Image 1 (cartoon, rainbow, N blue to C red):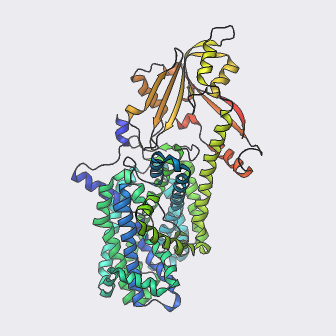
Image 2: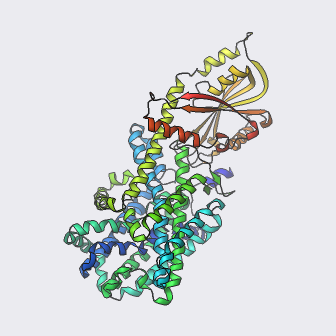
Image 3: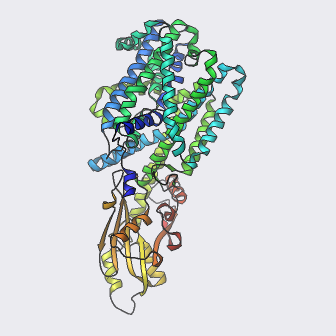
Length: 613
């Protein structure tokens, strides 16, 4: 049962463990939102232009940022969404799996909403590293202008190194995530406290009336500013996505004890600095620090942004793994970087795609100021929040409307990324369904096939010793690879196992519920293996467990039969030609089932067929 214990949702059983998990949550869960002070207030000030910003506008703007953090993060995520878990796991696809299980009538609608959220998160994994690291490294320009031309090359170099080490795993590095990010939040809070005294009028920002008054008086400019204010809550979705890693308690404790106070103090300090020194609008965050502290703060900020980027990257790995197991994407290679923690994974294809996307964004926009306009379109998560908390829906619709004005100025990037990913997942889902329909027309019921081959006659296939395991998605019908084996080789093994692998709508399946064996006759058995959508679908390990429970077979006399299909595009098929070709390309790029299911390669037999789709 050790494997299932590794999969169990995180729970803190004593105070030292609770504190350790709380510090870990500070580093992993809040790394992204913790880098927002680098650029959020600065970008919110830009729409006011050369005319400058008035005192009441600064107070109103900080008030708007504080109450956005309070309503969106505290109320929506920390207090509400963390309760909407799927057996202790959170995240868009985890919630989607739960809803599809509870309300199958709305599967299509929920699928589209779920893959939209997943697509936005994966797009976030491209924009967050680019924006955060650029913002941090740009602080070097304040240390000395000589660094101006080196900001982009240094940022790209950091990204290349970060993605290059992903294959080594995050276990050793993650030990330092919490403490470094904790120091970062303490610095944020201390810098804010040091400057709030510059102009105590900023404390009026705690009054939400000032936020409403600001929006009312600012008119169209205020509406535009909302898009920049939304930068204060980028990364908030990580609270929900990482629920299973840390548990509700440590995530909530980290927010109320450290993160929220530090962010609030820092934004208040930036506001007070601008009130007392209007020229600080150019970069209020780094100008909070004296010259002697600039370089250490830039280095600490860079470390914090790398940690934030790492958290988003690993989150993308986990999300893609869930999508694969739920059948939303083709199988990609998944490498496990830890012998004890199955959650630590590395997906080479996803890693390379993210790196390419990050570098392209960096060169496209060149600076954090330009890239921040692309970031404004993110943020929508689960639909249950909008259904239960209507005020949040109204508020987020305002944010959505404000962010739509950024589409022409870079906001098209997240829309383009999300649209592409949604098209890919929708195509895969639709193509798999169509392929299943086409192959079903040639299916032979398993009971009918058994009656034919077990009937004694001169045409009966030759019996050979050993066990043959045939993988199939439809246990009631005869696997195509079994039919091909009979047709071409004219043999039938002494024992034949029809194996079906199913992904449950829960994150993890306990070992005791892993398999079901049904004996159909002396020569045929049905075996169903069940995995959660976050489980490692290791068939060899599961079969070893079956052997301990009485399913007798010798691995060295067992053959695994897999069918390999060559798909051929048909203009008359149910898919448009472009989607047909996209599906075939995705199918061709999928990893071999032998590797994905961890089958012994020297015991696998593949028989191919051509299918027109």
